[in-house]
Image 1 (cartoon, rainbow, N blue to C red):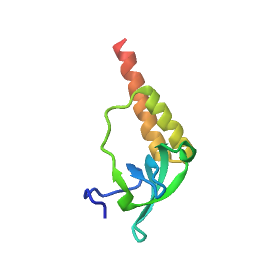
Image 2 (cartoon, rainbow, N blue to C red):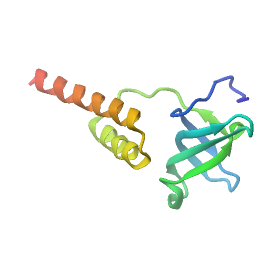
Image 3 (cartoon, helix red, strand yellow):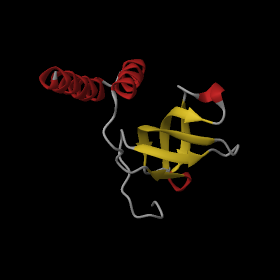
Image 4 (tube, helix red, strand yellow):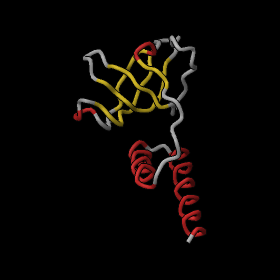
Length: 110
């Protein structure tokens, strides 16, 4: 499977390179282990025309990104929009929960 021994799963954030050499950061929308491929919804790329699209990549073309530091409000809002665009209800609920917790924390500190 993947060289770094990370087990990929749906909704994981990954970084990869397309067959055309485009650098891609996105999340796994779906996967086919039989074909050794993942469908990645592109969040960032050096080719802006593919941002928001879901493209197929081989599992050897991607690597899992580590969990990032806590997200700020703007990042959460962007990811919520992305979750809405992709119809990922579970991710949307997770992100809105994080945003609500952040808002409560700010109110309590005031």
